[in-house]
Length: 318
Length: 254
Image (tube, rainbow over all chains, first blue to last red; front, side, top):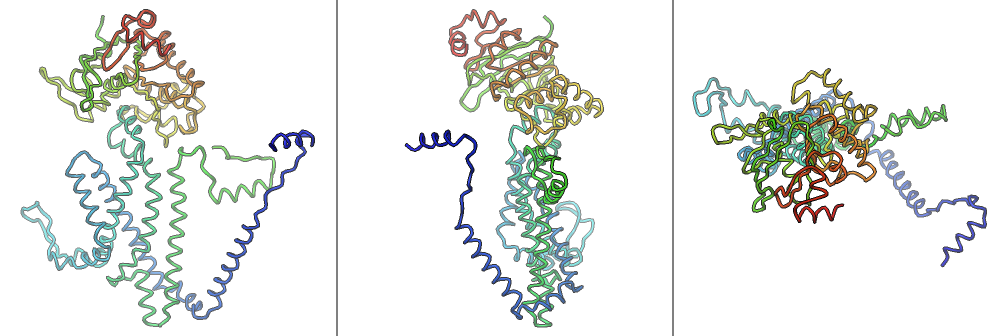
C-alpha cells in the first residue's frame, strides 16, 4: 500500500538528493556504559585492595627461581608437544592404514591413554622402577645385549616429559586423524592418478591441507599443556606452579605468589596464541581468495594511507 | 591396424550386487579421439576410471600401449601389481576430473610440475620450461603464480589439463570435464580440448557435449547399463543410430 507513495516521493524529491540517516541504538550505549562501570570497579578492586600484595608480586615476578621455573615449564611443554605430536602423527597414520593390526593397536593406545587421568599416568611413570627394575635391549624374547636400571634411565624429569608426551600423543593422534579426514578425497585420487609416490601424497598433498584443521585444535592442546604441566608438581619438579608453592610456604604470601604464576601462564599462552595466528595464515595460503592483513600490516596501512591518500588499497585483492 | 593405444577387453566390474560394467570391449588407436556418451549410471565414468586403475576390475583386462595397467601377466593369470608399480604405470595416463581436483595449497605452476618431478623424476628445470609452455598452450601464462581458488572454474580445468599433459602421457582421459562449469565457461575448456585433439593426442572423453562429439570425435561410443550398445563415426552414431536405446537417449539430449 505504501510502496507507490514512497516511489512518488522519491521521484518528486529530485532523485538522488535524499539523505540517509543511520539508525540509533540507545540500547547498545546503555549496555556499553554498564559494562564500562563494572570493568572500572573490577580494576579498582584489584589495585586498591592491599591484600593483593602487588609490591610482593613485583618483587618475585622476575626472581631468578621463578624465571628458572618458567623456563622448565616451557621445556616440559615443548617436549610434551613435539614428542606427543610426532607419536600422535604415527598413531594417526597407523589408524588410517590398511593393516588391521596397526589400526587396532593405534585405537587401543588412544583408548588407554585418554581413559587414565594424566596425574595417575605420571605417578605410574615416576614409579616405573618399582614395576621393572631393569630395562634390557636385545632380541625380543631372546638374549639381551645390555641392561640398564630403570632408575638410571628414567629420572623424574624424563618420567614427567614421557608422561606428558604419551598422554598428549593420544589426543594428538585424534586431531591429526581428524585433519586427514577433512581433506577432500578427490585430492588423494588426483595425486594417485598423477602417479605421485605414496609418501609424497601424504606429506606434500594431504598433510599441508590437513594442517588447516589440525592447527587450531593443536593450538588448544599446546595451551592446555602449558597449564597441564602444573600437574607435574606432584613429582616435586621445579616447574612454575611447584616453585611458587615452595616460595609461599616460606614467606606466607600465598595470594601474591599465585598471582605471579597466573601472570606467567598468561604471558606464555598469549605468546602461543599470537604464534598460532601466524601459523594458521601460513597454512591458509591459497585457501581464501585473499588473506586478511596481519595486525602489523593493518597498522602500517593506516599510516601509509594517512600520508598519501590517492595511493589506493595496495594488496587489497590478493 | 597397428596395436591399439588403449585396449579394453571383456571388462566386468561390480559394486556388491550391482554390476556396473558387464563385459566392455573398446579399442582406441594412437592419435584417435573417442567420445563416450550415455545416460547417468551407464558405467561411462567407471569404465574411464578402470582404464587407469582408479577402480579395480573384476574380470577382463586393460592395456595401454601393450602394457597391462595394474597387473602383470604370467601364463594365463594376472597378478595385481604393487602400488609403487601401479603409480609408475599411471604416469602414462593423464586424467582430467569433473571437479578439477587441483591442489589448492600449491600454485598453478607447482600443480603442473609436481608429478613430473616427484613421480617421473625428471629434472626440475626441464619440467618448469614445459610447464610454462603448457600454460601458454591453455592460455594461462599470466596465472602461473596464482592459487587455484583465485581462478574461475574454466581456468582451473585448463590448469588441470596442463597438469595432465605435463606427464607426457600416451593417452588423456577426460571424465565429464565441463559438467561442473557455468555454461559460459564451457567453451574455453572445449577449445583447449579441440586444439589438443588436432595435435594428435590420443583422448577418451566422457561428456554430455554432443556438439563436441560431432566435431572432434573419430569414434563415438554409446553406453547403457554397463555395456557398449554401439560405436562408430559421429555421423553414423549420432545421426543414424541403429539401436532404439541410442535413439531414445539422443532424443532427450539433442
